[in-house]
Image 1: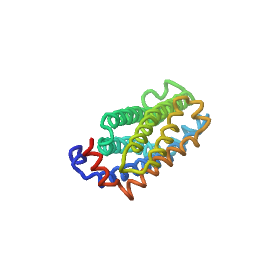
Image 2 (image 1 turned 45 degrees about the vertical axis):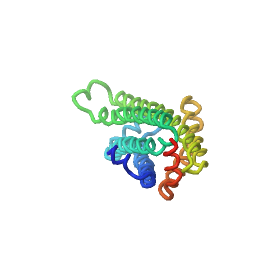
Image 3 (image 1 turned 135 degrees about the vertical axis):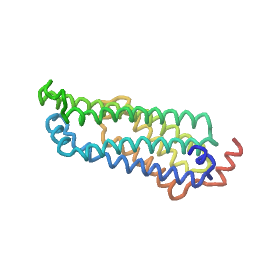
Image 4 (image 1 turned 120 degrees about the vertical axis):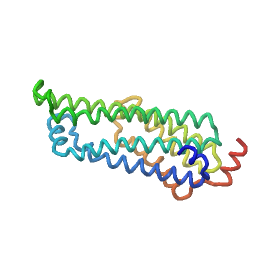
Length: 234
């Protein structure tokens, strides 16, 4: 697959990146209904919702895993696309993205844990129902914290992609500015209390920046001649 991506022309490769970036948004959207089952500060209600809508909760788990897998493909495509601008910086950006993907993939274990805990089994009589519910709720909170920690690495990734776009000659610079703002938004998760106070508004720069880049890549791709000129100069 990697060899096929490397051999592809930059314009269809850019559109492919846009298509997979769109899938990132779509798979993320599929996970939203599962999150709505979680009632803030109410472990019992959350447990009731999860058990009543088990398939919806499992769909959220599958969507989250798909989201990570799709973003890994985006990372590979962007690395190839921006290598002519600065190979080393493109590699560093890919490293931050893969770190974020790894953390969020691991966080999915915490997301699924409540389903395992609440489904009962041979240890169901060890604790009372409210204790199992509280334990399941703790795992959901751990998932949220781990997921948000992964967003920090995506913040660095978006900043670097924004800089690479600004240094490129084959994409509009405004996209680089928007991606940089998206990165700054994700970096607020370095200080969780601030991110919690600004949430969900802090996600707006990410949606605008990454969404704008997605639409541009899908519709326009890249300026082929300028990409080749920059690749030749590199």
